[in-house]
Image (cartoon, rainbow, N blue to C red):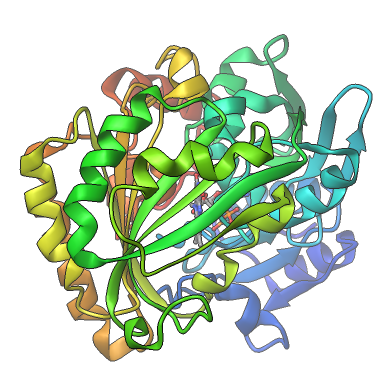
Length: 461
Ligand SMILES: Cc1cc2nc3c(=O)[nH]c(=O)nc-3n(C[C@H](O)[C@H](O)[C@H](O)COP(=O)(O)OP(=O)(O)OC[C@H]3O[C@@H](n4cnc5c(N)ncnc54)[C@H](O)[C@@H]3O)c2cc1C
C-alpha cells in the first residue's frame, strides 16, 4: 500500500477501497454528503473519506490504513452525539452503520451486538425472548457511543447502566490489533470503555447481559406549566425511595396536538411526567401516583405496553437534522432554590421545540462504586438535561444562549461535572465529563493504547 507518512495519495485510497468489503466514499461521491451529516444538524464537518465497514476485517483494514498515514480517525455508531464526535474535518470516518447484527443467547441471557447497531435493533432481537438490557430513552440512539458514555435509560435503576451490563467488548486498537476487553482480559481497557467516552479503540462488538423484561406499566401525564413547582417537589420527595423498577422524568415541553390533550392546551408550555415501571405491569399507574397525583392533569396516556414499544414512544420527539445545543448538570439535592432558578427559564424557551428534562439516578446505578468504571457520576441523585432545539439555523444562536443561560442559573446549585453522553460541547468532555482521578487514568490508557492520539475525541468546540 502506498501510504506516505503524514498524508495519503490517490493510489493509497484506491488500495483502501479495494481492501474493504464495504465502500469508500470521498468528497463528491454519492452518499458522502448524507453520511457525513449526523443527528445534530448544527454539526457541519467534512471528513477526508468515509469507510463503510461491513465487518471487523473492514475496521482493521481502515485503522491500519489510517495508522500508516498518521491520519486521525473518528467512528460513527448511531451518529447521535450532540457534540458531533463521530465526524471531524480532514479525518477518516469509520462508519459502522452496517455492523448492526444482534445475536441473542436466550439461555445464557446475553446478546452480542455489532458496534454500529441502534437500540431498536437490540430490542427487536431480544424482545421475542422477553429479554432486554438498559438502552436509551429513545430507540434511535447508537449502542456504540451510548455505552462508551455510561448509558442511562428506562431500565437503569433495576438493571444498572449499559456499562454495568457490558460483559465484554471486541476492540480494534489504534494500530489495527484486535483484542477482547473484559474483567479477565485487558481489564484496564475494559474499565476505560465503560464510561470513558471513547477514544480507546473501535468496538466492533459489544456483549451485554440481558434481563427478563416483557410488558411494562408506562405512560405520560401532562400538566399546565404552573404545576411545575409542586411536581418537582413531589419528584424530589418520591424518587429517592421509589422502587428500583421505577424510572421517571419531568419534562418541560410544548404540548403537541395529541388526541388526549384538550385543543386549548396544544402549543402551550406544559410539564409532562413520563415514567416506566418494569415490575408487575398492572401496578404502573399506582406506582407513579405519588408524583402524578400532585396536580390536576391536562391529559394522560398510560397503560401496559411491551418495553420495546415504550422505548420507541419518544423517537418522533427527537428528529434528526434540526439544530441542537445541549447541556447537562448534576445535583446532590433538589432544594427550593433550585426549583426557583429552573422553572421560569424552563417555562420560557427561546424556541418552543426546546425542552428541559429532570432525571433521577439511584437504585442499581448508585450501588456500584464511582471508580468501578469510568462513569464517575453514580452517586448523583438528580441530573437535568437542557435540550436546546432550533428547527432552523437562524434561531440557533438564541437557543444556545437560552441553554447556556439555564446552565449558568443552575450552576450555583449543581455539584459540578457532567455525564459525557449529554455534553453539548467537545470542550466539556475533556474538562468536566470525569472526576480528576478518572481523567488521569483515562489519559494514561490513551497514551498506552493510542500513543499517537489517532482516535482521540475532538477537544475544541
Ligand atoms: C435523541 C437522543 C436521545 C438520547 N438518549 C440518551 C439516553 O437515554 N441515555 C444516554 O445515556 N444517552 C442518550 N443520548 C446521548 C447518546 O448516548 C450519546 O450522544 C452517544 O454518544 C450516542 O452514541 P452514537 O453511537 O449514537 O453516536 P455517534 O455520534 O456515532 O458516536 C459518539 C461517540 O462514540 C464513538 N463511537 C460510537 N460507536 C463506537 C464504537 N463502536 N467503537 C468506538 N467508538 C464508538 C464515536 O467515535 C463518537 O466519539 C441521546 C442522544 C440523542 C441524540
